[in-house]
Length: 129
Length: 164
Figure 1 (cartoon, each protein chain N blue to C red):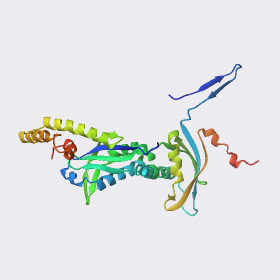
Figure 2: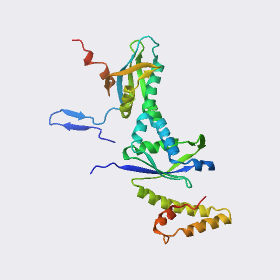
Figure 3: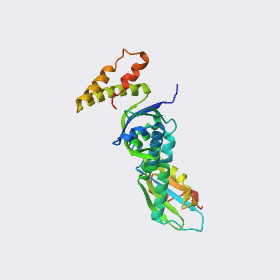
Figure 4: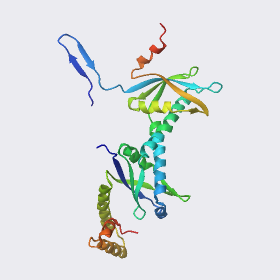
């Protein structure tokens, strides 16, 4: 097993733990940009699109990557994806290079990514002061 | 000094159809392997493995194939080899599969392994002989492999399987 923790105990009752090993899953908040005037994909079709993107770039091995769509909003076409940490690079590169959905131009914008799901709830980019 | 390191994958083509031997050629095999890599690893895998990919050596009589690829992507190549299910040439498709025998860093180590492997295969063929004429044939070809021939022929004699 890799280095799980390293405790630094000072003289007082203060202890800092540093976790070297990253979390199991990575979460991405993505938005699909699609031209207007056409059917919007529903949740299963959205997952099919993600798996298709993985299959084009990384083959059957990529398509078998365990990717989950945790939430999906059809109105805004935004979703939260969960992927195993070792597959983050494959998923992100596949989403970047996907160009077409049913012969219509499309693009994936990755808004936030984090190994913790709670971190996706706050977004300092859209903070209104 | 930094140099490009290659990996040489030694495989053998196994097929039930005897006509498959004639369609073992470098272009057909290269296309079949590339197609398998595209299916299994996608565009990224194909691009990775194609950087220095060639069929270095081919022996249609024994079905021995030597492939070369970069050291960084030899695992992608080796994992895609079981997915080669048929060889296609001149609009004929023959089912077959590739057996990986050895992965080496240089052609010389692969050749040493192949000579050793062919020796053991010849002995095994001799044991499995059913009739006397095959036995005589194999024994004659075994005895004709000798290093006292001309220098240029000795390397070929050692690798020759003596079958077919």
